[in-house]
Image (cartoon, rainbow, N blue to C red):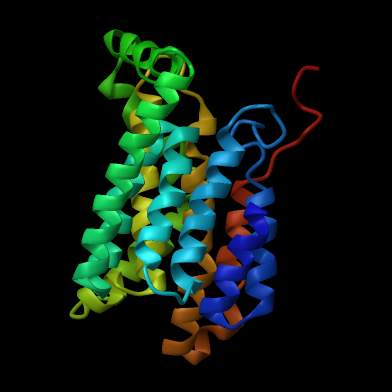
Amino acid sequence: ITAGVMGWMVQRITKKRLFAFLTIALYFATYHATGYYFDIVRNDAFFTMIIVSIAFVAMTLRVQNKAGFIAIFFVIAFETRQQAIFFLPPLALWFWLRDKKEGIIFATGAILFTVIALIVLNAATHGWSTFYMFTIPSAKRADFSIIRMFDAFPNFALGPFAASSVALVLLILFARGKRRSFFASDIGLIVMIALAALAAGAMSLGNEGGDRNVMMPFAAFVLMLLPIALNEIRIWKPAFSRYVFLPILFQFAALYFNPLSGKM
């Protein structure tokens, strides 16, 4: 579902089915880079699906009170993984830039619904939900390391995802002089969530025992930006069309791994 929704968003923006297919393929290629967590019975893959789906619904839903509806989705994401709090600011900013009223509704609704959900869940589990969601993670703060946070750059953003990270930077640079309209666009939403996912992953890596699974949302959003940026460059410089697939090839090569190289 995650990969399919990613492809759908890329096709919506680029109008190119091939770019959509390559986006799906790239996401599946991150199996090794994100720690083999696709098929482990944990909440990482499910959480990534929710965040990607929130972005997709925010882009495509055409109903009144859309911001309030997305706020409910955000509660589901937060209850799944508290890392979701990092995605509240970019979503709120995106709604605010499009319509200040919607921005206020989303931010207020997301916070209010989340608090209510936490209170209800805490009562229903006799305090165990709060213990697992907050008490245990707070105990890890004693082992938190700022140095480990920076592993997000050489091991991810500037490592296997370097080609896509360059695409992210280029899209921001292309928006010079029209930043407000850019960040209020569909592309702008993906860029902001990718940056939030990088920050969330870095923070989680700082915890003792933080593993590559925390970078799954970053992988999902930053990979979408590579074909999107290439499409923008192709439109800007038609002569670049003959080279458009080279960066995607580089990204595939960076994600290469030999599944037989590890121990059983």
